[in-house]
Length: 67
Image 1 (cartoon, rainbow, N blue to C red):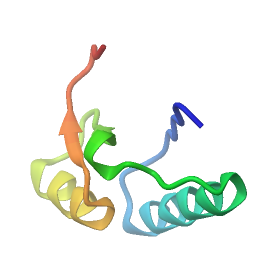
Image 2 (cartoon, rainbow, N blue to C red):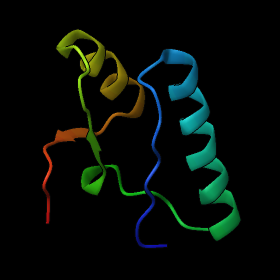
Image 3 (cartoon, rainbow, N blue to C red):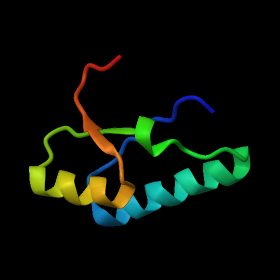
Image 4 (cartoon, helix red, strand yellow):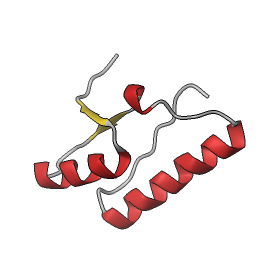
């Protein structure tokens, strides 16, 4: 599995569901998600909420456009 893009609203409930989806993808593919390569992008999201969400996922924030 190379890339997954999940689009949603920056809410704690939705973030937990995204984390579950990613775990399910790991189980189905028998591969682990590399958190060091994982990036999250925000649009119109307060910095405090961004920090909370990145703590849930344990990944880095990135900016668009990206490579």
